[in-house]
Length: 335
Image (cartoon, rainbow, N blue to C red):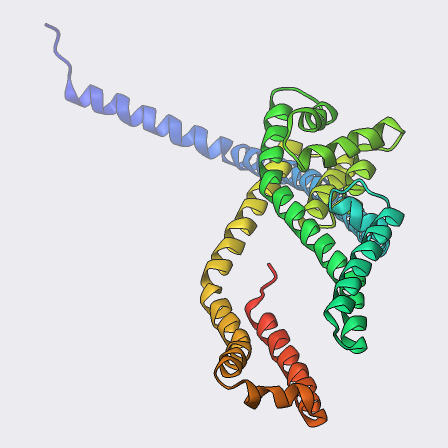
């Protein structure tokens, strides 16, 4: 084993430390200059990268603003067309189509006239007064047939709203599986359930005569003037103009429609008590009048034989109509 002299070892260490100190002292200025240069270069590079990021962010903001403006223009255009189409839906021909009936307007008026004539003949045979006969003719010829058309339209629209989310789900699965939107709509038009099937068939027929998919979907609001259909047309129009994930957009729309239906069902359930109270209050005067007539006919007949009774009945009918209208507004909710 070789031994090391501690004094020699200490001298070597001190010489190494002294040499390092001398080297650092001589190279300190160069090291500091290199550090400053590297720091300056890094700042320049970061400034350039920040400039690029700012430019990219500015471009994204401009693109988003252009897209937003395009969406707003499309929405305004769709709302304008929807307003024009809503005016057209007031015609009897459009109402017959909305009700799902295939009869013409002339045939509808003919059936109404025949129905009014039959009831007028029955009233004449019974021997009622001419004022009652005129009222029966007006109600049978103008009021009741239009009420039936309105009832059929409402029932068909409810069926459409119940089936529309399912049809949208089929479209979503078709798009995710690789089918284009036209084929997905054609699938609903051939294998869907009524009345969704017939409405989407009209979209396919409109495309076959040269309309775009967005315009064809917008035409659905003519035969089915519902907010949900307008939502669907807006989604298709925006996606065709601005692009994006169509399946995700239609999926969100399907979820919104289902939530709206759930909310309507919840509101209907919560308002049933108020509706029942309104029905009872509205029917109470007629029930009481019928019971009084059955127990004391002479007490009630004066309302039908005396002119003052006619005035009282007319005034009461007006107030009853106002009350029923107010109660109907109180228990009816738009969602």
